[in-house]
Length: 511
Ligand SMILES: Cc1cc2nc3c(=O)[nH]c(=O)nc-3n(C[C@H](O)[C@H](O)[C@H](O)COP(=O)(O)OP(=O)(O)OC[C@H]3O[C@@H](n4cnc5c(N)ncnc54)[C@H](O)[C@@H]3O)c2cc1C
Image (spheres, helix red, strand yellow):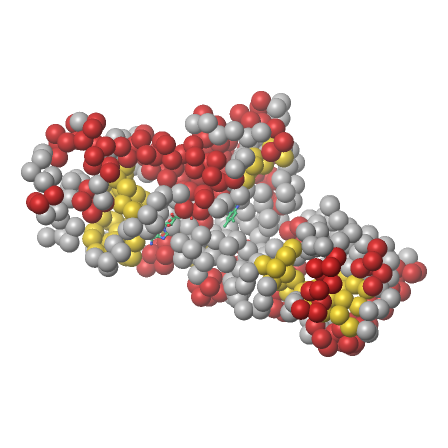
């Protein structure tokens, strides 16, 4: 007897399950029951077990239910939605109704070409293709359910630009997407087509002797275990960007900031590996630079962001690493190009170095701060340093002082003589010659994980050798950065999560 068998005292076990399901009202009653009780009524094996009721899991379950599948969604939290409650809600999709309504001609091929251009070929081609080919249909479905993208929120993107306006920014971020998906999900739960188990933690995969995945073992809040079996199992548990140990072990980079949902613990990766799967794309890690950490205890909060996008504020400062050397064209128009340089910098940090003249004449480096707050930070904040000389600044900030002096001298000379910049920087308004000198340390960070399970074009989890593991699929951030590559490709996580979830439910999984 399973620990979830229902004691007769609840008065429901004497009621025929078939009769209950025939009645819509009874289905609604069933839907309102705790999952542990509902489980005892779900004696027929499920077609599909979806682990994670977030971005990818919700839409996968909706589309599988449309095809008559018997779906069980296992969700660790007490409610569904996952990262949709915090995501930016920015979607990259081609050929959508929103584009057509504005006369924008776009194709999946153009989208694919843009992904490969922006990622410099580091996106996994078949994953990028799957995203580009199918995202338009997914966005159109959301539109049909009521998603609105106002005119001024359809653009070429905020990172490296797409070649046409294809970046759909939902009005209230991910909440707008959840608001149109949740009623449909709830309706299907009410009809008994989706069984939702909340507060249920998937802890193990079940496999038969031949290695076919046959479901998952779940535990409730009290640690009681139960088997949930199904013909196919989808891992849709999100990434690992709230699990510092796993994040660092997989990427070789500490988790400098924890921004993701606390539930993003990487359990799906562990489950996939336990069945023989493999992890790929760790090398696609790319942090955002320009953020100032509150402290150097990782993961840290953010104190502020520097305004260093040359499209809105051309840099007056130079950026140096701990060796006191420049390493980047500070005004490079591509954010991904700039950020990729951080891989090679010790501690994934740099310092924006400037002098008193820049402080007095340049547009504010931290636009959201008053000048008084900035000046105060140089006396109080561990990431802000000043020195009467460059040597003193270097010592205080932890930058090689001799090299810092040489670097600034070389920069000043080339500015004064109008020599070409060794990094091809174009905006060099003034030399850095008037002390005191200042340095503000920036630490890279990320909001998602890049390493994820390898899958084939049918989203079946594969071994390192490329063999599909029977019965096991995955979608969402558990796949890592296969779709966007080592770049800030607009909409590269949320859009594939929704698109691949829809594809799994709609076409791929046998029902
Ligand atoms: C602040 C922020 C902004 C972002 N903005 C964008 C953006 O604008 N565009 C973009 O493309 N991407 C964006 N992303 C990334 C994108 O939102 C996510 O990658 C995507 O939503 C993840 O979807 P998912 O289905 O994989 O995971 P989730 O939506 O997180 O769902 C996973 C679900 O699985 C559940 N779960 C986890 N472990 C278990 C377990 N063991 N048992 C049962 N359930 C479990 C979780 O509780 C959760 O509900 C952003 C991310 C963040 C953090």
